[in-house]
Image (cartoon, rainbow over all chains, first blue to last red):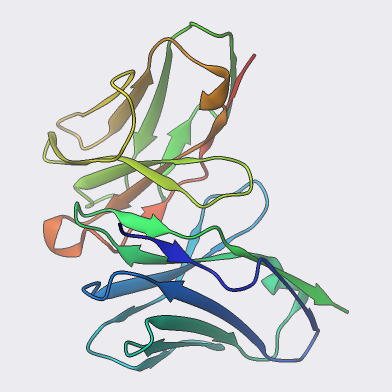
Length: 111
Length: 114
Protein backbone atom coordinates (compact mmCIF):
# COMPACT_ATOMS: atom_id res chain seq x y z
CA UNK A 1 0.00 0.00 0.00
CA UNK A 2 0.90 3.64 -0.06
CA UNK A 3 3.11 4.80 2.77
CA UNK A 4 5.58 7.47 3.65
CA UNK A 5 8.15 7.03 6.37
CA UNK A 6 11.04 8.85 7.95
CA UNK A 7 14.51 7.55 8.73
CA UNK A 8 15.04 9.38 12.02
CA UNK A 9 12.43 10.24 14.61
CA UNK A 10 14.57 12.93 16.32
CA UNK A 11 17.33 15.26 15.21
CA UNK A 12 19.34 17.61 17.40
CA UNK A 13 21.51 20.30 15.82
CA UNK A 14 23.54 23.28 16.98
CA UNK A 15 22.22 26.72 16.17
CA UNK A 16 23.80 27.94 12.96
CA UNK A 17 24.48 24.47 11.60
CA UNK A 18 22.68 22.99 8.63
CA UNK A 19 19.95 20.40 9.21
CA UNK A 20 19.03 17.51 6.96
CA UNK A 21 15.78 15.65 7.45
CA UNK A 22 15.23 12.51 5.42
CA UNK A 23 12.14 10.73 4.18
CA UNK A 24 11.50 7.53 2.23
CA UNK A 25 8.39 6.92 0.20
CA UNK A 26 7.06 3.69 -1.23
CA UNK A 27 4.86 4.66 -4.18
CA UNK A 28 7.09 5.10 -7.21
CA UNK A 29 4.14 6.64 -9.07
CA UNK A 30 3.88 9.57 -6.66
CA UNK A 31 4.38 12.82 -8.50
CA UNK A 32 4.11 15.44 -5.80
CA UNK A 33 5.69 15.86 -2.39
CA UNK A 34 5.41 18.46 0.35
CA UNK A 35 7.32 19.25 3.50
CA UNK A 36 5.39 20.59 6.47
CA UNK A 37 6.54 22.08 9.76
CA UNK A 38 4.36 21.60 12.81
CA UNK A 39 4.98 23.52 16.00
CA UNK A 40 3.48 22.38 19.26
CA UNK A 41 -0.25 23.06 19.44
CA UNK A 42 -0.48 24.24 15.83
CA UNK A 43 -1.49 22.82 12.49
CA UNK A 44 1.10 21.81 9.87
CA UNK A 45 2.63 24.75 8.05
CA UNK A 46 3.52 24.45 4.37
CA UNK A 47 7.29 24.80 3.82
CA UNK A 48 8.12 23.71 0.31
CA UNK A 49 6.90 21.33 -2.36
CA UNK A 50 8.43 19.51 -5.30
CA UNK A 51 7.06 17.67 -8.31
CA UNK A 52 8.51 14.43 -9.60
CA UNK A 53 9.88 16.09 -12.73
CA UNK A 54 12.36 17.98 -10.55
CA UNK A 55 15.37 16.84 -8.53
CA UNK A 56 15.84 19.93 -6.44
CA UNK A 57 13.94 22.99 -5.36
CA UNK A 58 15.11 25.86 -3.22
CA UNK A 59 13.25 28.25 -1.00
CA UNK A 60 14.31 30.68 1.66
CA UNK A 61 16.93 28.78 3.72
CA UNK A 62 15.36 25.46 2.70
CA UNK A 63 16.12 23.03 -0.10
CA UNK A 64 14.24 19.89 -1.00
CA UNK A 65 16.00 17.10 -2.87
CA UNK A 66 14.18 14.27 -4.60
CA UNK A 67 15.88 11.03 -5.61
CA UNK A 68 13.33 9.01 -7.53
CA UNK A 69 15.74 6.13 -8.12
CA UNK A 70 15.80 5.23 -4.44
CA UNK A 71 12.48 6.91 -3.56
CA UNK A 72 14.06 9.30 -1.13
CA UNK A 73 13.25 12.86 -0.19
CA UNK A 74 15.22 15.23 1.98
CA UNK A 75 14.77 18.68 3.48
CA UNK A 76 17.83 20.79 4.09
CA UNK A 77 17.62 23.79 6.38
CA UNK A 78 20.52 26.21 6.22
CA UNK A 79 21.80 28.05 9.30
CA UNK A 80 19.27 26.41 11.60
CA UNK A 81 17.69 28.75 14.11
CA UNK A 82 15.86 28.12 17.40
CA UNK A 83 12.61 29.01 15.64
CA UNK A 84 13.13 26.01 13.38
CA UNK A 85 12.53 23.66 16.30
CA UNK A 86 9.42 21.68 15.41
CA UNK A 87 8.23 18.38 14.00
CA UNK A 88 8.78 18.07 10.26
CA UNK A 89 6.61 15.87 8.07
CA UNK A 90 7.04 14.84 4.50
CA UNK A 91 3.86 14.01 2.63
CA UNK A 92 3.19 12.50 -0.78
CA UNK A 93 0.19 12.82 -3.04
CA UNK A 94 -2.37 10.07 -2.54
CA UNK A 95 -4.89 8.74 -5.03
CA UNK A 96 -7.87 10.74 -3.76
CA UNK A 97 -6.50 14.25 -3.75
CA UNK A 98 -5.26 13.56 -0.26
CA UNK A 99 -1.82 13.74 1.28
CA UNK A 100 -0.14 10.74 2.90
CA UNK A 101 2.02 11.71 5.87
CA UNK A 102 4.81 9.94 7.66
CA UNK A 103 5.28 9.97 11.41
CA UNK A 104 7.52 13.03 11.47
CA UNK A 105 10.98 14.02 12.65
CA UNK A 106 11.38 16.21 15.70
CA UNK A 107 14.07 18.83 15.16
CA UNK A 108 15.64 20.37 18.27
CA UNK A 109 18.00 23.31 17.91
CA UNK A 110 20.57 23.79 20.64
CA UNK A 111 21.68 27.38 21.36
CA UNK B 1 -5.21 37.48 5.00
CA UNK B 2 -7.25 35.01 7.03
CA UNK B 3 -6.03 31.45 6.89
CA UNK B 4 -8.04 28.33 7.52
CA UNK B 5 -10.12 28.69 10.66
CA UNK B 6 -11.52 25.90 12.79
CA UNK B 7 -13.90 25.79 15.73
CA UNK B 8 -13.96 24.96 18.49
CA UNK B 9 -10.32 24.99 19.55
CA UNK B 10 -10.77 22.37 22.23
CA UNK B 11 -13.59 20.00 23.03
CA UNK B 12 -14.20 17.39 25.71
CA UNK B 13 -16.84 14.73 25.11
CA UNK B 14 -17.96 11.51 26.74
CA UNK B 15 -17.95 8.11 25.06
CA UNK B 16 -21.07 7.55 22.99
CA UNK B 17 -21.70 11.24 22.39
CA UNK B 18 -21.75 13.04 19.06
CA UNK B 19 -19.47 15.89 17.97
CA UNK B 20 -19.50 18.45 15.15
CA UNK B 21 -16.34 20.25 14.11
CA UNK B 22 -16.33 23.25 11.79
CA UNK B 23 -13.92 24.63 9.24
CA UNK B 24 -13.76 27.72 7.05
CA UNK B 25 -11.29 27.56 4.14
CA UNK B 26 -9.03 30.28 2.86
CA UNK B 27 -10.95 32.79 0.78
CA UNK B 28 -11.06 31.57 -2.81
CA UNK B 29 -10.37 27.96 -1.91
CA UNK B 30 -13.14 25.58 -2.90
CA UNK B 31 -11.80 22.27 -1.58
CA UNK B 32 -11.65 21.15 2.03
CA UNK B 33 -9.96 18.07 3.45
CA UNK B 34 -10.18 16.62 6.95
CA UNK B 35 -7.40 14.78 8.76
CA UNK B 36 -7.08 13.09 12.12
CA UNK B 37 -3.78 13.40 13.96
CA UNK B 38 -3.22 11.13 16.91
CA UNK B 39 -0.50 12.25 19.32
CA UNK B 40 2.95 11.38 18.03
CA UNK B 41 1.83 10.51 14.50
CA UNK B 42 1.30 12.21 11.20
CA UNK B 43 -2.14 13.33 10.03
CA UNK B 44 -4.39 10.62 8.55
CA UNK B 45 -6.80 11.48 5.74
CA UNK B 46 -10.52 11.29 6.51
CA UNK B 47 -12.41 13.16 3.76
CA UNK B 48 -12.02 15.59 0.90
CA UNK B 49 -14.84 17.74 -0.44
CA UNK B 50 -15.06 19.96 -3.49
CA UNK B 51 -18.12 21.93 -4.57
CA UNK B 52 -20.17 20.15 -1.89
CA UNK B 53 -19.32 16.73 -3.28
CA UNK B 54 -17.22 14.08 -1.54
CA UNK B 55 -14.15 13.45 -3.68
CA UNK B 56 -12.22 11.16 -1.42
CA UNK B 57 -12.54 9.15 1.74
CA UNK B 58 -9.93 7.57 3.95
CA UNK B 59 -10.13 4.38 5.96
CA UNK B 60 -12.45 5.57 8.70
CA UNK B 61 -15.70 3.98 9.95
CA UNK B 62 -19.16 5.20 9.00
CA UNK B 63 -19.38 6.99 12.35
CA UNK B 64 -17.42 9.71 10.58
CA UNK B 65 -19.27 11.92 8.12
CA UNK B 66 -18.82 15.35 6.64
CA UNK B 67 -20.42 17.89 4.41
CA UNK B 68 -19.53 21.08 2.60
CA UNK B 69 -21.75 24.11 2.32
CA UNK B 70 -22.31 26.53 -0.60
CA UNK B 71 -19.86 29.00 0.98
CA UNK B 72 -17.25 26.17 0.96
CA UNK B 73 -17.12 25.84 4.73
CA UNK B 74 -17.34 22.33 6.06
CA UNK B 75 -18.42 20.26 9.02
CA UNK B 76 -17.02 16.97 10.28
CA UNK B 77 -19.38 14.85 12.35
CA UNK B 78 -18.43 11.91 14.52
CA UNK B 79 -21.10 9.72 16.12
CA UNK B 80 -20.87 7.26 19.00
CA UNK B 81 -17.51 8.60 20.15
CA UNK B 82 -14.86 6.17 21.29
CA UNK B 83 -11.84 6.84 23.46
CA UNK B 84 -9.69 6.23 20.40
CA UNK B 85 -11.28 9.19 18.64
CA UNK B 86 -9.29 11.49 20.90
CA UNK B 87 -7.03 13.40 18.53
CA UNK B 88 -6.30 16.68 16.82
CA UNK B 89 -8.68 17.12 13.90
CA UNK B 90 -7.21 19.19 11.12
CA UNK B 91 -8.91 20.89 8.25
CA UNK B 92 -6.98 21.82 5.13
CA UNK B 93 -8.09 23.90 2.20
CA UNK B 94 -6.92 24.01 -1.39
CA UNK B 95 -7.99 25.82 -4.54
CA UNK B 96 -9.62 22.89 -6.25
CA UNK B 97 -9.02 19.64 -8.15
CA UNK B 98 -6.05 20.89 -10.11
CA UNK B 99 -4.32 22.03 -6.95
CA UNK B 100 -5.84 19.63 -4.45
CA UNK B 101 -2.46 18.56 -3.07
CA UNK B 102 -1.30 22.07 -2.22
CA UNK B 103 -3.14 22.09 1.07
CA UNK B 104 -3.03 24.67 3.82
CA UNK B 105 -3.95 23.60 7.30
CA UNK B 106 -5.89 25.23 10.08
CA UNK B 107 -4.85 25.12 13.74
CA UNK B 108 -7.02 22.09 14.43
CA UNK B 109 -9.61 21.11 17.00
CA UNK B 110 -8.31 19.12 19.95
CA UNK B 111 -10.96 16.50 20.82
CA UNK B 112 -10.70 14.60 24.07
CA UNK B 113 -13.08 11.70 24.66
CA UNK B 114 -13.41 10.53 28.26
